[in-house]
Image 1 (cartoon, helix red, strand yellow):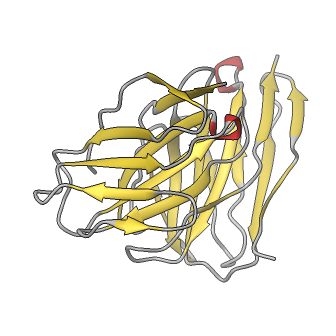
Image 2 (tube, rainbow over the protein chains, first blue to last red; image 1 turned 30 degrees about the vertical axis):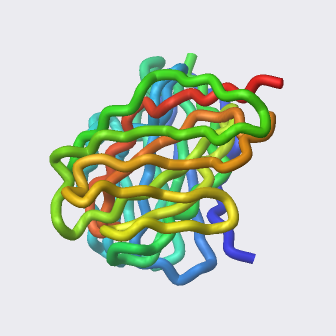
Length: 113
Length: 109
């Protein structure tokens, strides 16, 4: 079954404590992306990756890092989380090129206190 | 990346067709128009996409204007389970993708 898997699904952490949200896909997709969604708003892109070792900033990259060492994995790293990074996070993947469906993970609820 | 304009909310009676408009006047030639929906806070669900021609699948129909500056998603027989936020997104799957705030569709009995 085609899947984008995120972990953890729910996390409460403290300001400044580094954390990583993992994302893995089993569809051999080149394109992967991270979004955040705040209450009542649409998804805003944080970072995206066109392939292994190729990453680029989305609309709201500040405070986040990503890496793409393997095709299937695209972890989101918060080096020093702050309360304004409390949000719902989604990972997504697709094949590159137009006309390909984007698959989304189930989301990770992150609370920074 | 193209910007989109969608009405913030719409209502539809159960069993009737729901027509959701989207303006994407700055869409570039290689961007497809994708439609997704999000129910509560679940991951967005793919509905349909198109480049130039109208498209239909088991979920919906997509009408794209000839100049490609706008499109309409049609849910032919809306059910209560179609209540969701609907997003229209021009995208190439090769770079940035920008979600607007979408249209909240409420299907009423």
